[in-house]
Length: 334
Image (cartoon, rainbow, N blue to C red):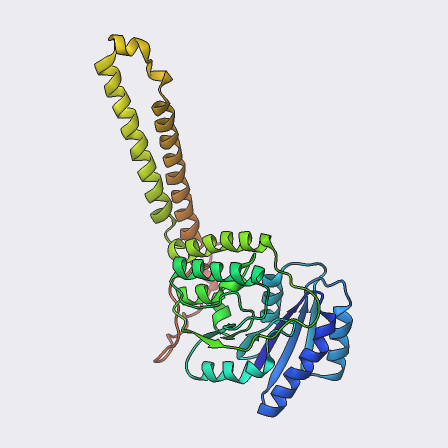
């Protein structure tokens, strides 16, 4: 089964045309599908539209949030509800073409675990296209995952990807990066991008700032998630040693110049270098301490941050440990 998850936020006019296209594609290609619309706190009647669609098509289900929780939460709810072996996400604004669905499945059948759409020709204003291209360049440069369009909402996954990748905040656009860090096979597909027919774009300047901060989080998780001390400790040690060198040089200056005419005109506690050196010592010590705390957290929660990822098993499973036997009645303590 293919589960199609569609996050919805104030898209009432596009939902029924979108469903009609999805149903047409599924019937034409004899696809076993379910469609899960997740209403992320819409206020325009989108939930009523979802109800009408679900009433006439048993393959459609809907989830309604009490308020707007964000796209990552909507996708997570859809993934938790989905029953399919393959999961496909798409936006509700009709800019993603449902006729691309068989092409995604063909890529998955070719052995990929994640297929990301690439809107090579976009029908968006330059104020949205330019920041998106800059953002995609930054993601490629910082993560090494060479996808052209990390922001594309149309992606297809094998279910096991989300047995290991957990979403929170606004990390939905980084699922391919998180999956690649665990060894899943990635690919991309050039898809048709259509002009928006209804509603308005949810993109804003704040999204770029949040995306950059999330990118830093993802870079840390994928590069140092199990060894935070390697990053924090390296920077902290460098700052600490630089501060220590500054303090040592000032002590040497005090020993050599104390009591001379030069010393009378420049007291040690008036030198800016002393403040900078002490600041570097404090900063380095803080980072080293944070690195140790991070290592302790990872050690206690190692299962949640498991580094490896098993794709297949061979051979007989190990037998279960025998249950503990109760002691004879005459040997038990009172």
